[in-house]
Length: 517
Image 1 (cartoon, rainbow, N blue to C red):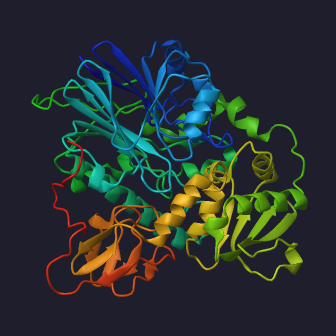
Image 2 (cartoon, rainbow, N blue to C red; image 1 turned 180 degrees about the vertical axis):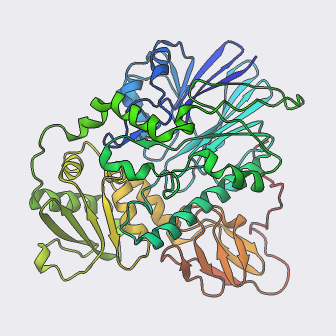
């Protein structure tokens, strides 16, 4: 019998016909000792370390998926299924750990694991580096999307069990300094977008059963306790959103699991469903559970506060941003903005862009669009290369302010991906809007969203507005100007009357051609 065991968060073990596969095992604190698995899964760690695994799959380099301390304890004889990302960073990090047996798979590439068992890689084809995995286990199809968003047109059909994100995994909006009423509005919008994205994945894959996974984390450091509020943040429990899912996906069963629970894969022809796990104390008494968890893991979350870091200097800060700009000149071409950085009692203002020169705070003529309030310990970790800005932002230890309140994709991409220019070069190509087009409702528009590379063949077009189905950016269908979400324009034009020219992408039907079989 095929069995799929949930390790918590996005972690799974899969057993089929004598084959054993380990997926995204996460046990140690992530993002500057801020994130912890929730519920606690520490009791499963010994058997994962001692287990014999034929294959290991790590979806991407985020620390709640790439648990380096755990991976360092696994047998190096294990073959690793590695998504073939442009930067090659994941493959290099696995090689550095001693995992030399690697099967590198590109988007939609399939690899046989054993008799009647295959794995198909799915990539986020935008500038982001994330992946999902489709396992065909003797006819039972398990799709693990974790927090990956492949193009909707590339999602497979006929999925028996779907594991995918329902809870947020981003610092926006809860790390920003919005007034309470604005924060409530923005949090509700993000949660609605997450549910919309999940429902689309369910409908397009035809998922028979959904397993809530890839969140939420919890925050054991008392300084971060406010982010454990499941009602006022983008980190809800499944039970907080289950009713919305039932409305959006009434034909899909849900199997609720706790760490260690096993789902026995049943053929699609078998009408039996897996009963949900009984609620644990982490659900019935979350405050008491969290307090005990915090005490059990005191040494782990207090590690962030040990030792006194050397104070950051202006020279270090300026040298850091000089290097980022040199690595990412194509991204910054024609761009200029200001960034304010506050750490402890010090403050710096940095001018960013292709012609920008860095100067001291009081002399900089460029008003900062973004202000980052960074604890000195966090800034020291970034300057020393122990963490990138992506990890620092995800730690929720940084406070953010922006004026105007408009998402700056160039700045955030420089911070998040600037150490891997392969990603920012891809972003530049996306924003250029060249290449494929799609024709919808009398319009010809660029095929891929300039924000995150989603396939706009699935865009919502109504009332003169084009809306991306992934993050719900909206553009004027007449001018292509961005009216909601950010500031990047969309290349769009009205179609002339008459038949569609050859070479364009038609409006896809609900049953999309080109999806994985």
